[in-house]
Image (tube, rainbow, N blue to C red; front, side):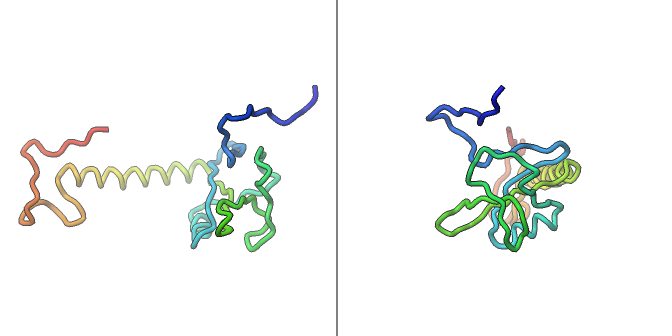
Length: 137
């Protein structure tokens, strides 16, 4: 059987930054803006190398630059901003998701009590009904 590129019909939406997964890891694109790539590395992410992923997008490249031989793509042609493919272990990813969830729950609990960044309702004229505030998903 002949190995050929997957056919994508004309007019069908496709994900330009789609990339193969890797067992035990979560992958994401991180734009090289400010300290985002360094912050991701400090948070446990690693740069993905070209030979460690499969792409259908011909514009995804291996760049030899200050970040080594990492997978990247120009995501803003006007500014020349590159996005780098990075990965983190599922263990660290799941721990991050739990931490994000806790922060969201704390905010929702405060909102239910009528509190916000200014504190609890009171002299400033804010009102919370006797039955409290209900947040529905």
